[in-house]
Image (tube, rainbow, N blue to C red; front, side, top):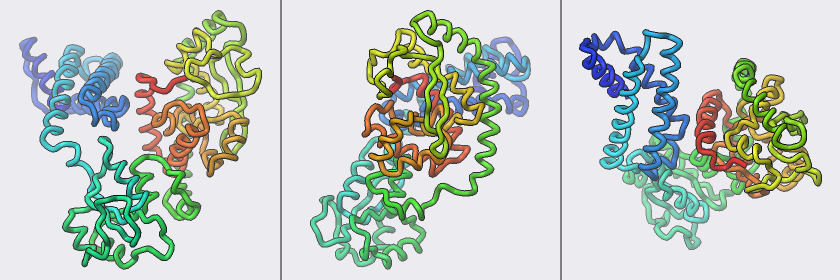
Length: 438
């Protein structure tokens, strides 16, 4: 991206018969172009798992990312005229950056392949858990490759290629020979079966040793409810008390950003409120009780996208092509305009920009009875967007709620300001490509 921006600068200087000047004189604008484009690439999913599977997919995302970066830089140029990029330079930089980034992916992918960037993992275990890791490693977007399986029990292994522990004289030497950078403990029954001597020797050689649930959490970005037990949740990292300062910073950001966003989007909210009012009978805004922090209820406000009698028989899940949705409602849901009034709820402190989706009390009571640890998602403020929303399509069943809960627990357990920033950037991808909007 730095090369593309500098080439664009030199090309434009040549066209007008001028000199590009010393590199130090344009270093800051070049860096600004690179950083802005990099941020846009993160936002639209250029580094997502799907981009590894398809060059066509990655190229489309790259084009959108560079276009968004150019729009942002053009705005900066408008605010700071003469101190940044000329518009003609931005046009050239956009074309050159897109070409060079696509070529970079083709060359690096062709020479090294995606496997060159994967961690090498040795699995201790050959049962159902090992089989799950095998299936996860075989996915094209996986960040690790399994270099071997070791059967630690006398029973018939589920993974055919597993080597019996008795056939290996020195486990730490075996790990070194395979070039493994991590060992994952995937035993079916851990009680009185932990190979402590083996694990200590492997650990002291500098190889990272991980437990199955923690490994799965890191690789999938969710807490796996199928293997979760209370002791792991209690003793694992996360839910840190040191997040108090982060929470204060988050609230300050919420107040500042929600106030600014309300000022900027008030004309849009007012316009669509009028359109909603004219399109169908009933109020322009929809108000509903939702469950928030520590299980306390609050009133959520959105632009109405359904008929006024949509919940006359009680709240129920939204369906695909839901007949309760109005003509205008279908549009504002796809482009997320119906969510804009929620910014007021953020300003009043009942919600945050990032957090688990707030549910209606009726659903919460039902899900709390059917899903383990469902109440733990209320240990953080609900949000307009969240980790579950960007990683899982719209959920309309108990099973969908279970999957989304796994992502919500991951967020509640691993919250950091950086994760919030990543979620907000990735939300732009969801808005541009609304795969799961209902």
